[in-house]
Length: 493
Image 1 (cartoon, rainbow, N blue to C red):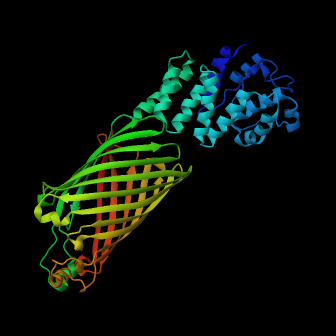
Image 2: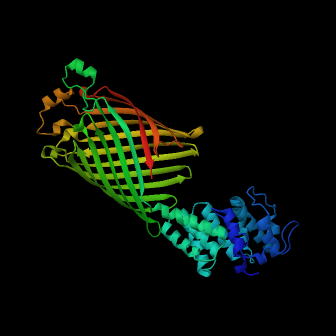
Image 3: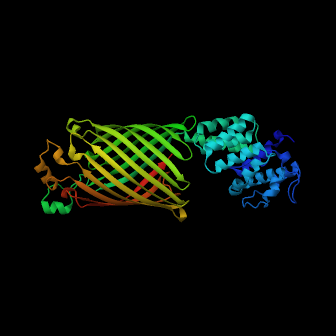
Protein backbone atom coordinates (compact mmCIF):
# COMPACT_ATOMS: atom_id res chain seq x y z
CA UNK A 1 0.00 0.00 0.00
CA UNK A 2 1.39 3.42 -0.96
CA UNK A 3 1.50 6.60 1.09
CA UNK A 4 -1.29 8.09 -1.04
CA UNK A 5 -3.63 5.35 0.18
CA UNK A 6 -2.91 6.18 3.79
CA UNK A 7 -3.93 9.81 3.79
CA UNK A 8 -7.40 9.15 5.24
CA UNK A 9 -6.16 7.08 8.18
CA UNK A 10 -3.34 9.54 8.84
CA UNK A 11 -5.72 12.49 8.80
CA UNK A 12 -8.12 10.72 11.14
CA UNK A 13 -5.26 10.13 13.56
CA UNK A 14 -4.45 13.84 13.46
CA UNK A 15 -8.10 14.71 13.99
CA UNK A 16 -8.29 12.75 17.22
CA UNK A 17 -4.92 13.99 18.52
CA UNK A 18 -5.19 17.75 17.93
CA UNK A 19 -3.89 20.26 18.87
CA UNK A 20 -0.53 18.55 18.53
CA UNK A 21 -0.63 15.09 17.03
CA UNK A 22 1.45 12.76 14.96
CA UNK A 23 0.29 10.77 12.00
CA UNK A 24 0.67 7.33 13.48
CA UNK A 25 2.52 5.75 10.56
CA UNK A 26 5.13 7.74 8.68
CA UNK A 27 6.25 4.62 6.81
CA UNK A 28 3.80 1.92 7.75
CA UNK A 29 5.36 -0.85 5.68
CA UNK A 30 8.52 -0.73 7.83
CA UNK A 31 6.94 -0.42 11.24
CA UNK A 32 6.94 -4.02 12.31
CA UNK A 33 9.27 -6.87 11.43
CA UNK A 34 9.50 -9.18 14.43
CA UNK A 35 6.63 -8.08 16.64
CA UNK A 36 6.00 -9.00 20.25
CA UNK A 37 2.78 -10.64 21.30
CA UNK A 38 -0.30 -8.38 20.91
CA UNK A 39 1.55 -6.05 18.51
CA UNK A 40 0.39 -5.63 14.87
CA UNK A 41 2.25 -7.70 12.33
CA UNK A 42 0.85 -6.29 9.05
CA UNK A 43 -0.07 -2.94 7.60
CA UNK A 44 -3.75 -3.87 7.75
CA UNK A 45 -3.39 -4.66 11.46
CA UNK A 46 -1.85 -1.26 12.11
CA UNK A 47 -4.61 0.56 10.22
CA UNK A 48 -7.23 -1.52 12.02
CA UNK A 49 -5.74 -0.55 15.38
CA UNK A 50 -6.03 3.12 14.47
CA UNK A 51 -9.80 2.83 14.36
CA UNK A 52 -10.36 0.19 17.08
CA UNK A 53 -7.78 0.92 19.82
CA UNK A 54 -8.57 3.89 22.06
CA UNK A 55 -6.06 6.74 22.14
CA UNK A 56 -3.58 6.13 24.90
CA UNK A 57 -4.00 9.23 27.04
CA UNK A 58 -2.61 7.40 30.08
CA UNK A 59 0.69 6.64 28.34
CA UNK A 60 0.23 2.89 28.97
CA UNK A 61 2.82 1.79 26.41
CA UNK A 62 4.77 -1.47 26.58
CA UNK A 63 8.05 -0.90 28.37
CA UNK A 64 10.66 -2.04 25.87
CA UNK A 65 14.31 -2.30 26.82
CA UNK A 66 16.56 0.12 24.96
CA UNK A 67 18.83 -2.68 23.68
CA UNK A 68 15.82 -4.48 22.25
CA UNK A 69 14.72 -1.35 20.40
CA UNK A 70 18.18 -0.55 19.04
CA UNK A 71 18.50 -4.05 17.57
CA UNK A 72 15.04 -3.91 16.02
CA UNK A 73 14.67 -0.68 13.98
CA UNK A 74 11.17 -1.58 12.82
CA UNK A 75 9.97 -2.09 16.39
CA UNK A 76 11.80 1.11 17.42
CA UNK A 77 9.91 3.04 14.71
CA UNK A 78 6.63 1.63 15.91
CA UNK A 79 7.53 2.53 19.51
CA UNK A 80 8.34 6.12 18.52
CA UNK A 81 4.94 6.32 16.84
CA UNK A 82 3.27 5.06 19.99
CA UNK A 83 5.00 7.72 22.08
CA UNK A 84 3.95 10.40 19.61
CA UNK A 85 0.36 9.19 19.57
CA UNK A 86 0.22 9.16 23.39
CA UNK A 87 2.11 12.47 23.53
CA UNK A 88 4.52 10.97 26.04
CA UNK A 89 6.92 13.91 25.80
CA UNK A 90 9.32 12.77 28.53
CA UNK A 91 9.87 9.31 27.12
CA UNK A 92 10.06 10.60 23.55
CA UNK A 93 12.81 13.04 24.53
CA UNK A 94 14.65 10.21 26.27
CA UNK A 95 14.70 7.67 23.43
CA UNK A 96 14.66 9.84 20.32
CA UNK A 97 18.44 10.54 20.40
CA UNK A 98 19.08 6.76 20.30
CA UNK A 99 16.60 6.32 17.45
CA UNK A 100 18.42 8.98 15.45
CA UNK A 101 21.68 7.05 15.77
CA UNK A 102 20.48 3.78 14.26
CA UNK A 103 21.19 3.45 10.54
CA UNK A 104 17.73 2.17 9.60
CA UNK A 105 15.71 4.96 11.20
CA UNK A 106 12.90 6.67 9.32
CA UNK A 107 14.06 10.24 8.46
CA UNK A 108 10.49 11.52 8.15
CA UNK A 109 9.58 10.10 11.54
CA UNK A 110 12.67 11.72 13.06
CA UNK A 111 11.76 15.08 11.56
CA UNK A 112 8.17 14.88 12.68
CA UNK A 113 9.11 13.81 16.21
CA UNK A 114 11.52 16.75 16.45
CA UNK A 115 8.86 19.16 15.22
CA UNK A 116 6.29 17.76 17.64
CA UNK A 117 8.67 18.18 20.58
CA UNK A 118 9.37 21.76 19.59
CA UNK A 119 5.64 22.43 19.30
CA UNK A 120 4.92 20.93 22.72
CA UNK A 121 7.70 23.11 24.17
CA UNK A 122 6.16 26.23 22.55
CA UNK A 123 9.22 26.57 20.32
CA UNK A 124 7.01 26.96 17.28
CA UNK A 125 9.54 28.62 14.99
CA UNK A 126 11.80 25.57 15.01
CA UNK A 127 8.81 23.30 14.46
CA UNK A 128 7.68 25.49 11.55
CA UNK A 129 11.13 25.27 9.96
CA UNK A 130 11.00 21.47 10.09
CA UNK A 131 7.48 21.27 8.65
CA UNK A 132 8.53 23.58 5.79
CA UNK A 133 11.55 21.39 5.09
CA UNK A 134 9.33 18.30 4.93
CA UNK A 135 6.90 20.03 2.58
CA UNK A 136 9.75 21.14 0.34
CA UNK A 137 10.42 17.46 -0.32
CA UNK A 138 6.76 16.57 -0.78
CA UNK A 139 4.27 19.47 -1.25
CA UNK A 140 1.41 16.95 -1.23
CA UNK A 141 2.14 15.74 2.29
CA UNK A 142 -1.12 17.23 3.60
CA UNK A 143 -0.87 16.05 7.26
CA UNK A 144 2.39 18.00 7.58
CA UNK A 145 0.78 21.06 5.97
CA UNK A 146 -2.03 20.93 8.52
CA UNK A 147 0.48 20.80 11.38
CA UNK A 148 2.38 23.65 9.79
CA UNK A 149 -0.80 25.73 9.72
CA UNK A 150 -1.54 24.95 13.38
CA UNK A 151 2.01 25.84 14.42
CA UNK A 152 1.77 29.11 12.50
CA UNK A 153 -1.45 29.91 14.36
CA UNK A 154 0.18 29.19 17.71
CA UNK A 155 3.09 31.41 16.68
CA UNK A 156 0.57 34.17 15.82
CA UNK A 157 1.54 34.12 12.12
CA UNK A 158 -2.09 34.28 11.12
CA UNK A 159 -1.71 35.45 7.53
CA UNK A 160 0.80 32.70 6.73
CA UNK A 161 -1.39 30.14 8.49
CA UNK A 162 -4.40 31.26 6.46
CA UNK A 163 -2.47 30.70 3.24
CA UNK A 164 -1.67 27.12 4.27
CA UNK A 165 -5.28 26.43 5.29
CA UNK A 166 -6.60 27.76 1.97
CA UNK A 167 -4.23 25.36 0.15
CA UNK A 168 -5.56 22.46 2.24
CA UNK A 169 -9.16 23.48 1.58
CA UNK A 170 -8.55 23.11 -2.15
CA UNK A 171 -7.65 19.44 -1.70
CA UNK A 172 -10.02 16.47 -1.47
CA UNK A 173 -9.63 15.76 2.23
CA UNK A 174 -11.66 13.73 4.74
CA UNK A 175 -14.65 15.62 6.12
CA UNK A 176 -13.31 15.75 9.74
CA UNK A 177 -10.14 17.43 8.50
CA UNK A 178 -12.07 19.94 6.38
CA UNK A 179 -14.03 20.77 9.53
CA UNK A 180 -10.76 21.55 11.31
CA UNK A 181 -9.54 23.63 8.38
CA UNK A 182 -12.79 25.63 8.17
CA UNK A 183 -12.89 26.19 11.95
CA UNK A 184 -9.37 27.64 11.96
CA UNK A 185 -10.10 29.82 8.93
CA UNK A 186 -13.11 31.25 10.77
CA UNK A 187 -10.95 31.76 13.85
CA UNK A 188 -8.42 33.79 11.86
CA UNK A 189 -11.06 35.79 9.99
CA UNK A 190 -12.85 36.66 13.24
CA UNK A 191 -9.70 38.40 14.46
CA UNK A 192 -9.97 40.88 11.60
CA UNK A 193 -13.59 41.77 12.26
CA UNK A 194 -14.50 45.09 13.85
CA UNK A 195 -14.97 44.72 17.61
CA UNK A 196 -17.05 47.13 19.67
CA UNK A 197 -17.37 47.73 23.39
CA UNK A 198 -19.88 49.93 25.18
CA UNK A 199 -20.46 50.61 28.87
CA UNK A 200 -22.38 53.09 30.99
CA UNK A 201 -22.99 53.73 34.65
CA UNK A 202 -24.70 56.27 36.86
CA UNK A 203 -22.51 58.99 38.39
CA UNK A 204 -23.06 60.71 41.74
CA UNK A 205 -20.23 63.06 42.65
CA UNK A 206 -20.72 64.88 45.95
CA UNK A 207 -17.80 67.24 45.31
CA UNK A 208 -17.53 67.85 41.56
CA UNK A 209 -15.77 71.20 42.12
CA UNK A 210 -13.05 69.67 44.33
CA UNK A 211 -13.82 71.87 47.34
CA UNK A 212 -11.80 71.37 50.55
CA UNK A 213 -13.08 69.04 53.23
CA UNK A 214 -15.72 70.07 55.75
CA UNK A 215 -13.11 70.15 58.49
CA UNK A 216 -10.95 72.59 56.54
CA UNK A 217 -13.93 74.78 55.65
CA UNK A 218 -14.92 74.99 59.33
CA UNK A 219 -11.44 75.69 60.68
CA UNK A 220 -10.36 78.20 58.04
CA UNK A 221 -13.69 79.76 57.08
CA UNK A 222 -13.55 78.76 53.43
CA UNK A 223 -16.48 80.03 51.39
CA UNK A 224 -16.14 77.29 48.74
CA UNK A 225 -18.83 74.68 49.22
CA UNK A 226 -18.90 71.36 47.36
CA UNK A 227 -21.26 71.01 44.40
CA UNK A 228 -23.20 67.77 44.04
CA UNK A 229 -23.47 66.35 40.52
CA UNK A 230 -25.61 63.62 38.98
CA UNK A 231 -24.93 62.14 35.57
CA UNK A 232 -23.74 59.24 33.47
CA UNK A 233 -20.29 57.92 32.62
CA UNK A 234 -20.21 56.42 29.12
CA UNK A 235 -17.54 54.61 27.13
CA UNK A 236 -17.71 53.37 23.53
CA UNK A 237 -14.79 51.87 21.61
CA UNK A 238 -14.11 50.31 18.21
CA UNK A 239 -11.15 48.13 17.25
CA UNK A 240 -9.97 46.36 14.11
CA UNK A 241 -6.90 44.20 13.59
CA UNK A 242 -5.16 43.45 10.30
CA UNK A 243 -2.95 40.35 10.16
CA UNK A 244 0.14 40.99 8.05
CA UNK A 245 2.80 38.58 6.82
CA UNK A 246 4.91 36.57 9.22
CA UNK A 247 4.28 37.78 12.79
CA UNK A 248 3.38 41.38 11.99
CA UNK A 249 0.01 43.08 12.38
CA UNK A 250 -1.59 46.52 12.40
CA UNK A 251 -4.63 47.95 14.17
CA UNK A 252 -7.10 50.81 14.02
CA UNK A 253 -8.98 51.91 17.13
CA UNK A 254 -11.02 54.75 18.54
CA UNK A 255 -13.08 55.55 21.60
CA UNK A 256 -15.34 58.12 23.24
CA UNK A 257 -15.00 58.35 27.01
CA UNK A 258 -16.66 60.88 29.26
CA UNK A 259 -18.84 62.11 32.08
CA UNK A 260 -22.14 63.82 31.30
CA UNK A 261 -24.07 65.62 34.09
CA UNK A 262 -27.69 66.74 33.80
CA UNK A 263 -27.75 69.16 36.79
CA UNK A 264 -24.32 70.87 36.31
CA UNK A 265 -23.60 70.81 32.58
CA UNK A 266 -20.62 73.10 33.00
CA UNK A 267 -18.67 70.10 34.32
CA UNK A 268 -19.32 67.83 31.33
CA UNK A 269 -15.94 66.31 30.45
CA UNK A 270 -15.33 63.83 27.63
CA UNK A 271 -12.71 62.91 25.07
CA UNK A 272 -12.44 61.39 21.60
CA UNK A 273 -9.35 59.33 20.85
CA UNK A 274 -8.09 57.71 17.66
CA UNK A 275 -5.06 55.45 17.30
CA UNK A 276 -3.28 53.12 14.94
CA UNK A 277 -0.57 50.58 15.62
CA UNK A 278 2.02 48.35 14.03
CA UNK A 279 3.17 45.33 15.99
CA UNK A 280 4.98 42.03 16.03
CA UNK A 281 3.59 39.04 17.91
CA UNK A 282 4.40 35.39 18.42
CA UNK A 283 3.38 32.81 21.01
CA UNK A 284 5.50 34.41 23.75
CA UNK A 285 6.08 38.04 22.79
CA UNK A 286 4.04 41.03 21.64
CA UNK A 287 5.62 44.38 20.72
CA UNK A 288 3.69 47.35 19.30
CA UNK A 289 4.08 51.06 18.62
CA UNK A 290 0.86 53.11 18.65
CA UNK A 291 0.60 56.77 17.54
CA UNK A 292 -2.57 58.48 18.83
CA UNK A 293 -4.49 61.75 18.84
CA UNK A 294 -6.95 62.82 21.54
CA UNK A 295 -9.44 65.68 21.64
CA UNK A 296 -10.80 66.72 25.05
CA UNK A 297 -14.09 68.59 25.37
CA UNK A 298 -14.94 70.38 28.63
CA UNK A 299 -18.09 72.37 29.38
CA UNK A 300 -19.25 71.23 25.92
CA UNK A 301 -16.44 73.25 24.29
CA UNK A 302 -13.15 72.12 22.74
CA UNK A 303 -10.64 72.25 25.58
CA UNK A 304 -7.39 70.61 24.44
CA UNK A 305 -5.87 68.22 21.93
CA UNK A 306 -3.07 65.77 22.56
CA UNK A 307 -0.67 63.97 20.22
CA UNK A 308 1.46 61.09 21.35
CA UNK A 309 2.89 57.64 20.83
CA UNK A 310 2.71 54.51 22.97
CA UNK A 311 5.16 51.62 22.96
CA UNK A 312 4.03 48.37 24.57
CA UNK A 313 5.62 44.97 25.13
CA UNK A 314 4.25 41.71 26.46
CA UNK A 315 6.06 38.52 27.37
CA UNK A 316 4.88 35.16 28.70
CA UNK A 317 7.52 34.13 31.24
CA UNK A 318 5.81 30.77 31.60
CA UNK A 319 2.32 29.41 30.76
CA UNK A 320 0.90 31.05 33.91
CA UNK A 321 2.78 34.34 34.11
CA UNK A 322 2.75 37.32 31.76
CA UNK A 323 4.82 40.48 32.10
CA UNK A 324 4.00 43.65 30.15
CA UNK A 325 5.45 47.14 29.88
CA UNK A 326 4.20 50.48 28.59
CA UNK A 327 6.08 53.62 27.59
CA UNK A 328 4.11 56.66 26.44
CA UNK A 329 5.03 60.18 25.39
CA UNK A 330 2.63 62.98 24.52
CA UNK A 331 2.13 66.71 24.05
CA UNK A 332 -1.07 68.53 24.97
CA UNK A 333 -2.15 71.88 23.50
CA UNK A 334 -5.07 73.94 24.89
CA UNK A 335 -7.60 75.85 22.82
CA UNK A 336 -8.30 78.98 24.89
CA UNK A 337 -5.61 81.59 25.38
CA UNK A 338 -6.21 81.64 29.13
CA UNK A 339 -5.39 77.94 29.29
CA UNK A 340 -2.25 78.09 27.13
CA UNK A 341 -0.17 78.09 30.31
CA UNK A 342 -1.38 74.52 30.76
CA UNK A 343 0.26 73.28 27.54
CA UNK A 344 2.45 70.39 28.57
CA UNK A 345 4.42 67.35 27.59
CA UNK A 346 4.27 64.13 29.56
CA UNK A 347 5.54 60.58 29.67
CA UNK A 348 4.50 57.35 31.34
CA UNK A 349 6.55 54.31 32.29
CA UNK A 350 4.82 51.21 33.58
CA UNK A 351 5.30 47.52 34.21
CA UNK A 352 2.52 45.03 34.97
CA UNK A 353 2.32 41.37 35.85
CA UNK A 354 -0.49 38.84 35.49
CA UNK A 355 -0.48 35.39 37.11
CA UNK A 356 -3.10 32.71 36.47
CA UNK A 357 -3.16 30.26 39.35
CA UNK A 358 -5.81 28.09 37.74
CA UNK A 359 -8.82 28.38 35.45
CA UNK A 360 -10.86 30.19 38.11
CA UNK A 361 -8.36 32.40 39.92
CA UNK A 362 -5.76 34.99 38.93
CA UNK A 363 -3.65 37.77 40.41
CA UNK A 364 -2.27 40.98 38.92
CA UNK A 365 -0.24 44.03 39.88
CA UNK A 366 1.95 46.79 38.56
CA UNK A 367 4.12 49.86 39.08
CA UNK A 368 4.12 53.11 37.12
CA UNK A 369 5.79 56.51 36.95
CA UNK A 370 4.10 59.48 35.30
CA UNK A 371 5.59 62.92 34.65
CA UNK A 372 3.70 65.98 33.37
CA UNK A 373 5.67 69.14 32.64
CA UNK A 374 3.88 72.44 31.94
CA UNK A 375 6.75 74.82 31.33
CA UNK A 376 4.62 77.96 31.74
CA UNK A 377 2.95 76.75 34.95
CA UNK A 378 5.21 74.86 37.39
CA UNK A 379 2.45 74.66 40.00
CA UNK A 380 0.54 72.14 37.87
CA UNK A 381 3.65 70.22 36.74
CA UNK A 382 3.92 67.02 38.70
CA UNK A 383 5.21 63.45 38.90
CA UNK A 384 3.22 60.49 40.16
CA UNK A 385 4.49 57.12 41.35
CA UNK A 386 1.84 54.47 41.81
CA UNK A 387 1.39 50.79 42.55
CA UNK A 388 -1.57 48.45 42.36
CA UNK A 389 -2.31 44.83 43.16
CA UNK A 390 -5.42 42.79 42.48
CA UNK A 391 -7.16 39.44 42.69
CA UNK A 392 -9.78 37.94 40.39
CA UNK A 393 -11.97 34.93 41.04
CA UNK A 394 -14.66 32.95 39.23
CA UNK A 395 -17.04 31.49 41.79
CA UNK A 396 -19.77 28.88 41.57
CA UNK A 397 -23.09 29.66 39.85
CA UNK A 398 -21.45 32.01 37.32
CA UNK A 399 -20.35 34.67 39.82
CA UNK A 400 -17.12 36.60 39.14
CA UNK A 401 -15.32 39.20 41.22
CA UNK A 402 -12.19 41.34 41.32
CA UNK A 403 -10.60 43.36 44.11
CA UNK A 404 -7.94 45.98 43.34
CA UNK A 405 -5.90 48.06 45.78
CA UNK A 406 -4.06 51.20 44.61
CA UNK A 407 -1.55 53.55 46.18
CA UNK A 408 -0.04 56.68 44.62
CA UNK A 409 2.22 59.58 45.57
CA UNK A 410 1.84 62.78 43.59
CA UNK A 411 4.44 65.52 43.96
CA UNK A 412 4.15 68.94 42.31
CA UNK A 413 7.03 71.15 41.21
CA UNK A 414 8.16 73.92 43.52
CA UNK A 415 5.97 77.04 43.07
CA UNK A 416 9.03 79.26 43.41
CA UNK A 417 10.02 78.15 39.88
CA UNK A 418 7.19 80.32 38.53
CA UNK A 419 8.41 83.95 38.39
CA UNK A 420 4.89 85.27 37.72
CA UNK A 421 3.26 83.61 40.73
CA UNK A 422 2.27 85.57 43.84
CA UNK A 423 3.72 83.11 46.34
CA UNK A 424 2.17 84.51 49.56
CA UNK A 425 -1.29 84.51 47.99
CA UNK A 426 -0.78 81.02 46.58
CA UNK A 427 0.24 79.49 49.91
CA UNK A 428 -2.51 81.37 51.76
CA UNK A 429 -5.19 80.18 49.34
CA UNK A 430 -4.21 76.51 49.38
CA UNK A 431 -2.99 76.48 52.97
CA UNK A 432 0.52 75.21 52.39
CA UNK A 433 3.71 75.97 54.25
CA UNK A 434 5.69 78.76 52.62
CA UNK A 435 8.46 77.40 50.37
CA UNK A 436 7.05 73.86 50.27
CA UNK A 437 5.87 71.79 47.31
CA UNK A 438 2.48 70.13 47.30
CA UNK A 439 2.51 66.37 47.93
CA UNK A 440 -0.60 64.17 47.80
CA UNK A 441 -0.88 60.56 48.89
CA UNK A 442 -3.91 58.56 47.75
CA UNK A 443 -4.93 55.02 48.52
CA UNK A 444 -8.02 53.31 47.19
CA UNK A 445 -9.69 49.96 46.92
CA UNK A 446 -12.17 48.86 44.26
CA UNK A 447 -14.40 45.80 44.25
CA UNK A 448 -16.33 44.49 41.24
CA UNK A 449 -18.98 41.77 41.20
CA UNK A 450 -20.98 40.38 38.28
CA UNK A 451 -22.73 37.25 36.99
CA UNK A 452 -21.18 35.93 33.81
CA UNK A 453 -24.35 34.40 32.38
CA UNK A 454 -26.78 37.20 33.33
CA UNK A 455 -27.75 39.97 30.90
CA UNK A 456 -30.32 42.72 30.68
CA UNK A 457 -31.24 43.53 27.08
CA UNK A 458 -27.85 42.21 25.99
CA UNK A 459 -25.98 44.19 28.66
CA UNK A 460 -24.00 42.63 31.51
CA UNK A 461 -24.54 44.49 34.82
CA UNK A 462 -21.52 44.86 37.08
CA UNK A 463 -21.62 46.17 40.66
CA UNK A 464 -18.65 48.46 41.37
CA UNK A 465 -17.80 49.79 44.84
CA UNK A 466 -14.87 52.17 45.32
CA UNK A 467 -13.32 53.79 48.38
CA UNK A 468 -10.51 56.37 48.21
CA UNK A 469 -8.76 58.70 50.61
CA UNK A 470 -6.27 61.49 49.87
CA UNK A 471 -3.92 63.18 52.29
CA UNK A 472 -1.91 66.26 51.39
CA UNK A 473 0.55 68.63 53.02
CA UNK A 474 -1.57 71.44 51.55
CA UNK A 475 -4.62 71.58 53.82
CA UNK A 476 -6.93 72.66 51.01
CA UNK A 477 -6.46 69.23 49.43
CA UNK A 478 -6.09 67.24 52.65
CA UNK A 479 -8.44 64.74 54.25
CA UNK A 480 -10.50 63.96 51.16
CA UNK A 481 -12.48 60.77 51.41
CA UNK A 482 -14.93 59.20 48.99
CA UNK A 483 -17.08 56.08 49.01
CA UNK A 484 -19.16 55.32 45.92
CA UNK A 485 -21.13 52.49 44.46
CA UNK A 486 -22.61 52.07 41.01
CA UNK A 487 -23.87 49.51 38.53
CA UNK A 488 -22.10 49.48 35.18
CA UNK A 489 -23.77 48.03 32.10
CA UNK A 490 -21.33 46.59 29.54
CA UNK A 491 -21.67 45.01 26.11
CA UNK A 492 -19.12 43.56 23.70
CA UNK A 493 -20.16 43.04 20.09
